Length: 165
Image (cartoon, rainbow, N blue to C red; front, side):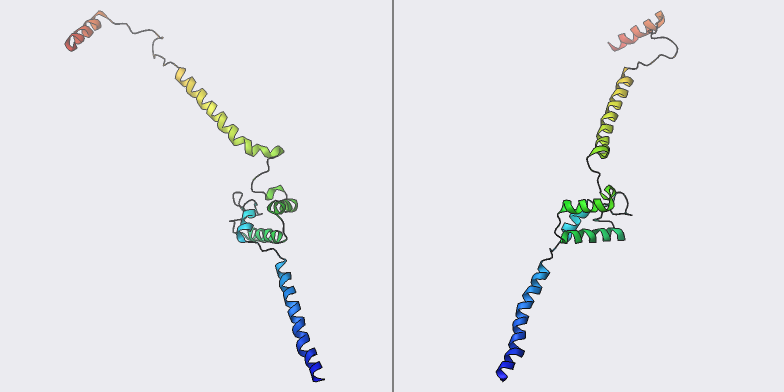
């Protein structure tokens, strides 16, 4: 009879423990592990509330950026892809959370405006240089006539030329 109690009190808990421990370990592995690089890869496309306009969530030091990175980590651990995480954050906070505007509709202007500005500025510079080069210098007292030489001036010029030639 002692052998029966020994089996119940010693072997049964050991068997139960050995079957339960691997299941607990598997439950911990169900959670997807996310690296810091993956979080920062998503965070560089997000502008957290309160940070400067030029700062993204990957290097902003405000508490809202830490909260945003934590939220990104949580969404990635749920198994979402980068685009799904960004879409979820846009649904929650609006388009303003995106670090760069989308390329659709009215948001296309910030993508096109710099190129158009450079082209128009170049054309303006070319036009101004062309106009400036075409201008003729105006004489202060006369019209565009040649200066007249007196006989005395002509003699001086001839003498100078004889000395040099």
